[in-house]
Amino acid sequence: MTNLENINWSSLPFGYLKADYNVRCIYKDGKWGEIEVSDSEFVNIHIAATCLHYGQEIFEGLKAFRGKDGKIRIFRPEANAQRLINSAKGIKMEPVPEELFLEMVKKVVKLNERFIPPYESGSSLYIRPVEIGTQARVGVKPADEYTLIIFVTPVGPYFPEGFKPTKVAVYREYDRAAPCGTGRWKVGGNYACGMGATARAQENGFSAVLFLDPKEKKYLDECGPANFFAIKGNKYITPKSGSILPSITNMSLQQIAKDMGLEVECRPIPIEELAEVDEAAECGTAAVCSPLSEIYDNDNDKTYVISKDGNPGPVVTELYKRLQGIQKGDIEDIHGWNTILD
Ligand SMILES: *Cc1c(COP(=O)(O)O)cnc(C)c1O
Image 1: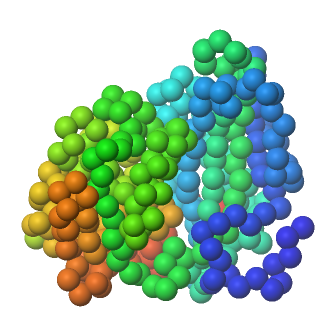
Image 2: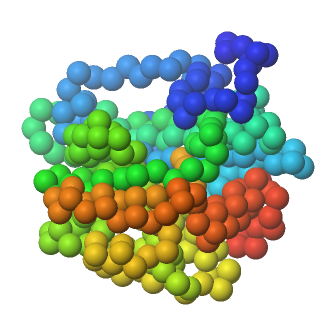
């Protein structure tokens, strides 16, 4: 068993640490079976399983937080359940019923309660559900058997040095998803598509790639694992596109922006409009939101400077604080987003 005595909760990386248990459920003969609790970090699957050959893999990511009041809050698990269902339908895998998903999420968090970082650390428990096609098939056809696994791992604050803006790059020679492809679903294969571009960006000193719409290469899509939004005057603007993944963080920030009196616009955003925005950020469960200081358009050798002094802007900072406050229980959860573990 992992020894937690000497662990420094506030300096955990966004990485993997073995927790005590994971939960699993198998779909076979037309139905989901019983929830199994496992202490193994491995799966034993057939060498011809469809997930290994034909990319039948979808996943989710969400977090649980320990509050100042000692309560454990899981952020919007119903939204993740619905998105996992959409992803499954999108690539013809078996959808996991919402109730089963929620029961498994609560169970795995409860079983690993000692891994939920203390409130003061700024860290949280990352929950990773993954569904794979496990039937042996050589012909290309969706499997009739699936395995859902949910594991957890404590993760540190995404910004160990504080909330600092980063630079991202735009390259027109790469796409992460096709115009009518799988970008709108949380499919592992989308990440495979983005790896080359991301590696190149990182070699050149950028934190990530900001992908353009794959059809016209005119509009902003999203960053590899995170949605994009910007603040322009009194507006929160975020791309509308058929090839981006609907981020639950983005949806939540849009609501908070409205609560703050901002107007929300979800529409195609031409890359040139970056010259007119006041603030920009990428958002997702891992980082909540990560401000952007510069966006470099590689093909036109043009840099859009978003933050002149290298500091995060006031609106992005406020959005970040409010969302984190709700997640940790410091700010009233007026939209009923948290599931409190009993
Ligand atoms: C998971 C993911 C996000 C972020 O979604 P959240 O629900 O906010 O965590 C954004 N883009 C892509 C491509 C993703 O896979």
